[in-house]
Image (cartoon, rainbow, N blue to C red; front, top):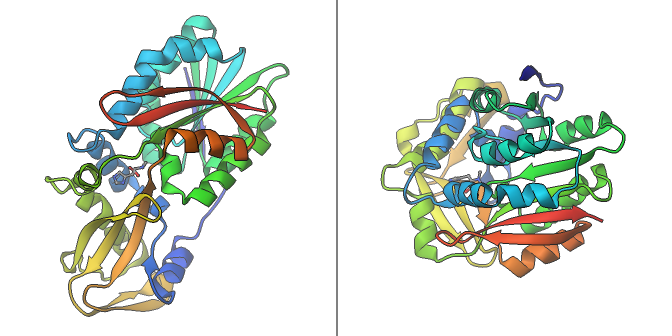
Length: 322
Ligand code: AVI
């Protein structure tokens, strides 16, 4: 069953963020959340099928293999809230297992309307699962769901696909602590985290041969053109993936191929680029197993179980709110 999605109540200001990120001194940057408009979400879906990018498939394999065990470890009755559902495909096996136990509400929370639509289409055939989508920022959506929880009902929050890796480590702990504040003791959080791996493997994953990740990254400039009337010449920027050893992350940048100036009328700014200068668009932090336990503890969770994929270093972590 699908209940119509709840539409946005928060307007985050794309123009302000673009102006601030591109006019700051030093490293220019654009927030990675803006990678996911309709085109970006569709390109990310393609990335998840690329042979070089094993992350999403590892996440799906773990959820498929351990779905029943996860359900058994989560006390019921339970409502499931997913922060950033994407297409919803990887959540299917878990929802099917829950639906065998009892009728369950599933609340996907997404800032992308297109992703929410895709998710609802993908999962609507599962019996005994009622889907209510929220077009919201993660914490706003979680707060709303938590406010309406029924007495005696537990929440299981899903934060899969290593989206936590797109926060820097301190911001990751802060975000988990905010999730914890909204939850009650005994609620759970299933956290998917990509684990450390070789630089060569990471560079292949974030700079694939077909150029899909390059298109995903460059679409951010195309989005600024579409939505803010800018005149970025996409052919004059190149996608670059870099390893940052200090932060144990892989970074995506857009590098200016020449000295150029770009006008962004709706953000009331003209931006000057030097040849070789970059816009930092995303970091994907990689975790160690011990670090996840520690991070969970700092945020007010106990790590109950960790499952690891054998083909692509990735961990599914079941955390319990203390
Ligand atoms: C969504 N997120 C976890 C992806 C990642 O691996 O950091 C986004 C992505 N960026 C480039 N490829 C995939």
